[in-house]
Length: 241
Image 1 (spheres, one colour):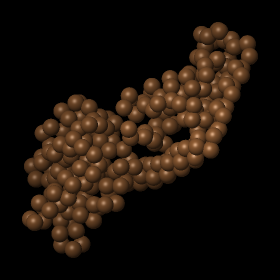
Image 2 (cartoon, helix red, strand yellow; image 1 turned 120 degrees about the vertical axis):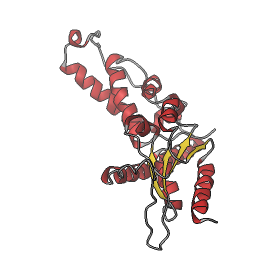
Image 3 (cartoon, one colour; image 1 turned 135 degrees about the horizontal axis):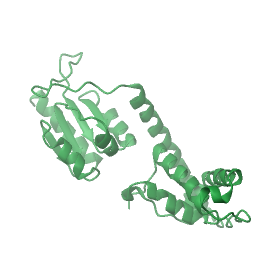
Image 4 (cartoon, one colour; image 1 turned 60 degrees about the vertical axis):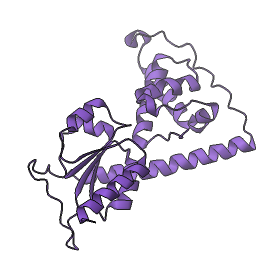
């Protein structure tokens, strides 16, 4: 099973929701709070909440609990519609660490740090770089390349930022790539490129309907590796090879 690593945005949403969970249920355990808070994400992004996961996120969980308790102390219970807590709950005992558990903990933290770093840089690039103007519907034109070869414009819908960063590093010298996450495709205006690729496993039917009349539409029902192969074929076809 593929391990799910939350992006910076997903973690922000989960721990913002967790603050509300603690405000409404001050006596809830850390494990149940994490399990309930992740419901703010789409179900395919939910994790299996284990004691080790709770231990990895204990600092953020306690920060969310403290923020909730602070709000409860500032407002009378009747103002927020819940019974006043008598005492703050006693935190559950930490799981006993073993050498194997400690190694898993370190590996998970390293994965989280790498994923957050990549996602943050991609998000910053996406914020700083305005989206291109939609190309004409009747004749989408590729962007000129310094070598004289015109790179075809390709819109890819359905990757998360870290995946988009990986694909861009591989093929940016061959194709003029632009990426929408599944959420971007729902909420942002439709744009047209010479080619559009839909990652069908990760987007809704509404997005597919929105782009079904796009010129040179491609459906990718596989992994990132399958997508890279498809983009290579688009590049070769454009070169006439």
